[in-house]
Amino acid sequence: MNTPYKTAMVWISFFFATVGHAQPAIYKDADYKLGEKLIAESKCVACHVSKVGGNGSAIYKPQGRINNASLLRGMVEQCNTELNLGMFPEDVTSVAAVLNRDHYKFK
Ligand code: HEC
Image (cartoon, rainbow, N blue to C red; front, top):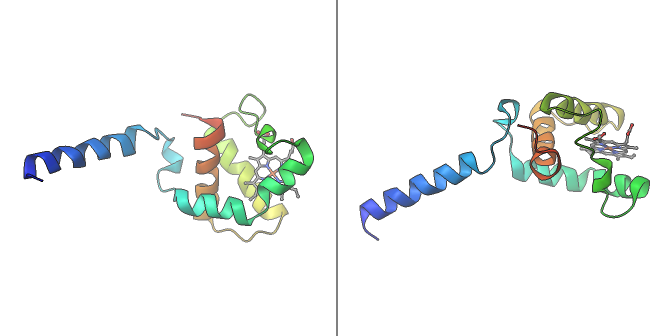
């Protein structure tokens, strides 16, 4: 592969990595792989399914009282405390960022 072409590819993937997610500033340090893993391991979905059925995603209500990115992060922090999950602040941010990307889509 010649160099100008490679350079273009790097810029194009950079563009999609940045613009594709368009996440709020408070999630800029989020680790999406970590967030997904924590959501899977923390029984979040299992419990939500037992409350609302389906795949559990009906519990996430972007039009409800959680209506911006920092409230969403605060809600995850509250779950973390209440459920004694022992997540670090950066874990909480990563979990909230995954929920935002997949469900809430706050800007
Ligand atoms: C033991 C059950 C249980 C577990 C485990 C649980 N949740 Fe929840 N979650 C709930 C219930 C019940 C609600 C609805 C609360 C309400 O509407 O007042 C909720 C609501 C939420 C909401 C707010 C939904 C909205 O838009 O109003 C978020 C965000 C959330 N949970 C994230 C998580 C995450 C992240 C985890 C795992 C780290 C988790 N929950 C684990 C029971 C649980």
